[in-house]
Image (cartoon, rainbow, N blue to C red; front, side):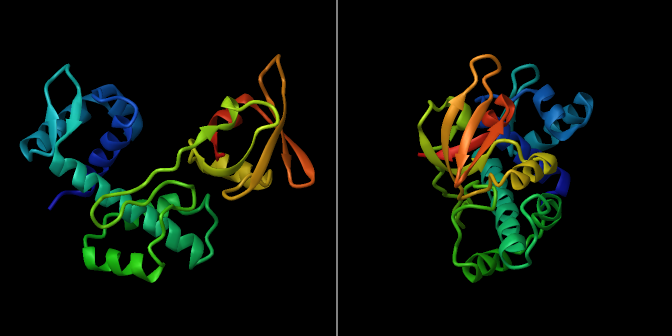
Length: 216
């Protein structure tokens, strides 16, 4: 059995490794809001369990066993988020912290039954893919709004920023998963973007456009 902290480290390393093949101690420390010295101690423990490949000053990668555990935690987290939104009427900005607690429930049978009960959803409320019981998943091919040209249209299908304040902002602006949008103007000075959302225009900053993902 692995501790909750060990599972959190494996999950963090997995997420960080999506953007870079080898993950540094400082990246992990920043992601988990902890000290680099504490990270080093934990990495040694995970290496002893053969869950990561770790050489000091050379970065970290997950072993096959470590990746399997990380995907299992991610699967549980995203299934619980889906359950909380779809079955218990939580808002999408309210579920992350609750799912952080529920993801550590060990029972595989419970999670598989939860998955079946909800009809085996493929994506969580934020548009992130939910791994199946074998750790397999199909990711959306998404692009940030900031990369799109004027007159291009698409459907909001994901976010890069999962913070509560950002999700609440999107909710207020009616920019939620499944909403169809069209880019009508890009400001050449600050690269802010004007969107057509149903029958109204919505103005968003460059930062928001970078963190809002659409499927074409």
